[in-house]
Length: 566
Image 1 (cartoon, one colour):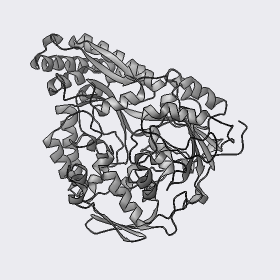
Image 2 (cartoon, rainbow, N blue to C red):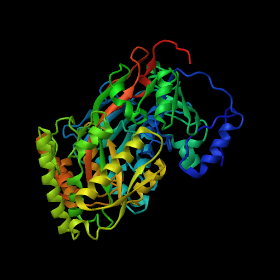
Image 3 (tube, rainbow, N blue to C red):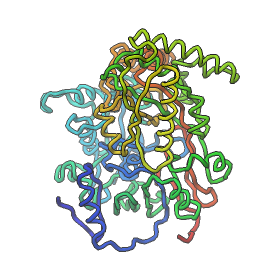
Image 4 (cartoon, rainbow, N blue to C red):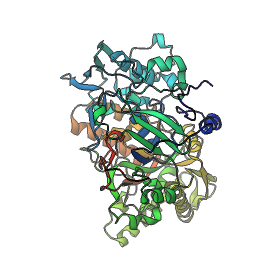
């Protein structure tokens, strides 16, 4: 294991395999010495698995990845929408299928090597290559030949070329399969960031473990102390370095709500970015304090079925489950952050789109508690009919199964367990079905979900851009984030039709029909609720943080107002 050090005690990168954790921790602690006080401290919940922007999948990983690597566009901290990044401007052809991006002159990695159009082309080709095994490679399916390349078993030499080319050192041309109005937002996604070819060709998949890590974004990686903190320092070669508000940032990891809250209230943390480390039991009290800020955004909580395992390969079983889960009860008694019960996948507020009506919508539309109870009773009767038709009248003969969720000390983990306990009672009482809870460590949870090694599992999704496809694309048969084993030719056909349709109303009609198939007819998932964001910062002390629908809060815009003792 080759690792370079600039100074004793600095562990200079990320790792992809848990087997390296012990060795990495030893290298950190050997000769460790106190680090200078940072300008800003942010709590980022879970320990990241990697900072490779084309491999990472989790939201905590993505926040770090977006700070270290940038693409043609980046996200506006106020609106969460695309704004110029490495590209200073772009033009779109009249048919909406060709984008011409103009890079800023003088771009460079944090280590001083220049960034040119060829680096964008190479980075995108690496990301879409099936050998990279990027879960987010589906974003490249909008680019000409992206899907054909990523799903091909053929040798690279016989695959069609990806629809991107360098016209000159400062100009990139991208050809799309269909008009894609949100394509600039896609170009700001982590997987489309520019990565250093020279480092990857030298070190392979371990390139982010070699110091210094060449970064294309506003920050560079200084150190990583596993299960504690990552230190970032302003990238002196970044094109917009003068507007990067904090010189050094410590990004903390940890899943203890009491620890995070105490550190925040005593001024040791400036920004808690994720509500999973804010104690749920204190939600009603904290929401009345000026330092805690709820907001609506594009996120949801749902249950995934493994549709490759019996009896969950039968949509009648999945419908029965979906109809008896009391979602109002779950949000009122457990989540308690003001979430809205969900019957569909795409959250309200998605730009221009009115979503489908899913299972149980009659109950969610009820205006009074009595009407809600009556509607739920009708849903239970319908669920029992579906279950009997599937061969399990009254739950007789239904095999015992498990419900998986990630465990840990955070409020989110406790919430997952409480939801599981409530669902146990609902399915037992209404359908006569028993199941076991299976809590697992977060990295195991991600691994088992990717491998389809579960019966039923908790799921969630945060929209990457403000369009319904950021949710609906997940359940295409070949999407790496599907993680249900569900495949439906009609769904894929409707999604393809929407992608090829330029007229917004017709496009939304096709997307709504696909969503109806997903949440009413086939039900590989059960929507539970639409998220409400809830972050913590004192507006008298910290600036540059804004509520937006995509929950994007780029670190380069955040700063502490004045020097405070730590």
